[in-house]
Image (tube, rainbow, N blue to C red):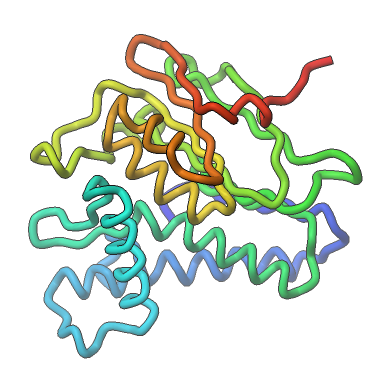
Length: 240
């Protein structure tokens, strides 16, 4: 996955339960890593015939095309003659891992990979999961703490991985007008794909999120000014 992954199960669980989740992420990395010559993605980009693409890979491409249409072209996995669905696969994989844990009877857990999070149930009875939003100009500082359960959170930004999201409608130029955009959605898959698309829109991204039913967002621009959606404040943790 190219980044640390954290899994916390608040219910009674064993090490084998965690092993199954991490093994799943290893499988996803082996399939979709753009850095491994043996991955299916690398083979596709090297010219693998379409009739040899896996069913799952085809489904991922369909989801990417759907997101492209829903974001008016701002989500685009085609770079030259290469495909890179990383902006969707990470959130999709976290969401799939969440479904696997729920299928095994777990109701309270937290999965995080590179700032993308699925928070299910509660951290402890009556206490929802708390998530900090970093200051992109001072990453040791938390500017907001939000509380969620049974939802996903995704943050797109340049302060950890550098420039990796570009504007496909403007010759794939770097997005410099904003530094981070955090999106709360019904699950991490939805939050992740729209966070990526909205970040590519620059300062207009927060308005795009505000118009999406069931989504909220918090954006910090290059002038260190924060802008957030109409319903975002209801998720902000109250400090006693």
